[in-house]
Amino acid sequence: MAFDIDTFRVAPGDKIRLDKRDPQDTPHVDPDDRAAAETRTLELNGRLEELQELLWAQGKHRVLVVLQAMDAGGKDGTIKHVFEHVNPSGVRVAAFKKPSDDELRHDYLWRVHKEVPGDGELVIFNRSHYEDVLVVRVMDLVPKSTWKKRFGHIRAFEELLVDEGTTVLKFFLHTSKEEQRERLQERLDRPEKNWKFDAGDLVHREKWDDYMDAFADVLEETSTVDAPWFIIPANRKWYRNLAISEIMVNALEALEMTYPPAPADIAEMTISD
Image (cartoon, rainbow, N blue to C red; front, side, top):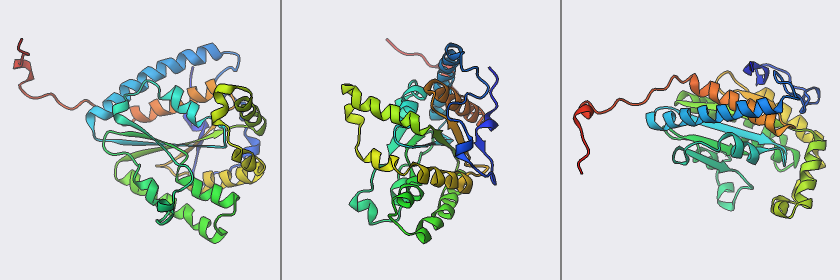
């Protein structure tokens, strides 16, 4: 199953038309061959587990994964199915909800910078600093003159992270409006999912086209060589998991990590009774 990761990467200068990208698509995979794709995903899960253990043991590199999507777009599912086997000791998930009063008293990146990975860590952002050029724009919470400048802030912020040793991988989970409707309806219909339903999601759903325009601008303005965006067709959850797993394994293998050297006299050590 050959995968070309550049299929999903947003290159600097790309013009994005999300309405021209099919969220149902399965590049490089026969859509009728789901079983093979899921088998491959399990193999990648195992390799990702090995690489994350190596990342944590070496304690040299840092990895930041950013997940953005519309409501019910699959952020939680991605975390559950792509990262289910990694070592909790070296992995954190940071979820960015509506800012608290204390957070609003600081600049918008203040709460974000506190959550970035340290040496050896893999941190997953469930939503992120990009909410401050998405929600605030679409819901008209700040003027255009404010959110427009933030593209430059964010590029500089991520450049800082990269320069300090962080690998930044950003995934936009691209789902259709109809797929969102089905997922939100499922949250209403299934009692065990009722807790996930938020009536506020319907307010944002009414502004779907505005959000697509905002996401397109985010992808165009902030995908760089060192902190790229990947647009993942995410209507099919199994394909979403496969594509992100392929990209994650490829990125971690590129770090060419090694285990730290053992103590010089380890061969002479024994464990007493």
